[in-house]
Length: 373
Image 1 (tube, rainbow, N blue to C red):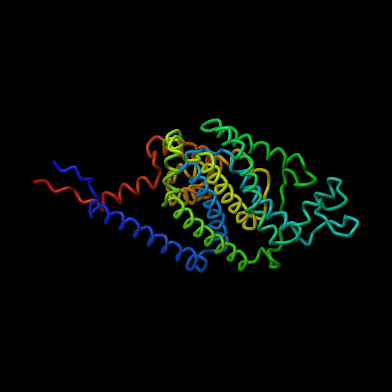
Image 2 (cartoon, rainbow, N blue to C red; image 1 turned 30 degrees about the horizontal axis):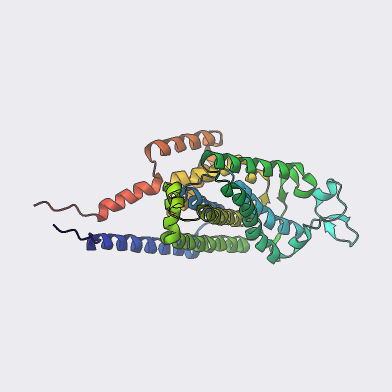
């Protein structure tokens, strides 16, 4: 009897190579179209819309790493999206030429909502945001540090499953209340708006809008490549092992809490970057972006696109927001109903999402039927 260990067939290796080749070619073609062609053929309005959706797609990739690959459902990633958005929004607000005449002892003007709230000077923690490089660093560091502290407390106590989801949702609610309550520091429900310049250039010009769109494309591409690398190696296999059986991974000697914390922080940073790229294209950031509804929408995009599929996360964000924009223009009162119905249909009939269907088609296309003798 032959007891040798079976080796992967040449056909299996060929199939994997074909899938990788298809992925590389597809990503390259899409990147070329998005960066080189679309800015020259789309209207400024539509290009701006697409830029917003791509910023959302960055958040969706982070959600997919956390939920799709590692099995941790977060219903509070609006927190990190808003933190990144507010960090950049604070800088853009300070660069506005319409600051109120109220000033602190040094003669420095302050935003109008601070004057209306009774402040006589700029809070000390606002002052560093005059520097654009500090603001850009804060976009990454603030969500990362907050996620690191919160994640450490959660994972150290081995909180998971529905309890993790509830805590993340509660965090979103807390931040929303704080942003609304401290009107004199955050502009309350109105949020930060009236942005005029970005790195000294008029933010409302088509040229600057095009630069913001291209920057969003490039950052999304870089995040996709990094995430693809992360999930393809040993770290990615451990993420899946934690998702499928956390106790077995822990029993095997892996520091599960540490790996979950790392993924959680990476996911939060992605959300912060997405929020920062969203703000200069929408020209507003308010507590709504930190709320529970926004956080749940992030999860819906990943569900529609397909869990544990980076391409699916991006596709889901673009698809859902594209349909949302189209229906909102034609039938705004029906969008919420359509979104809920679509989610229900996807969960019941397409549990692997849109990319699951596409992968099934590709498998049928490339897998040859076995020959019978």
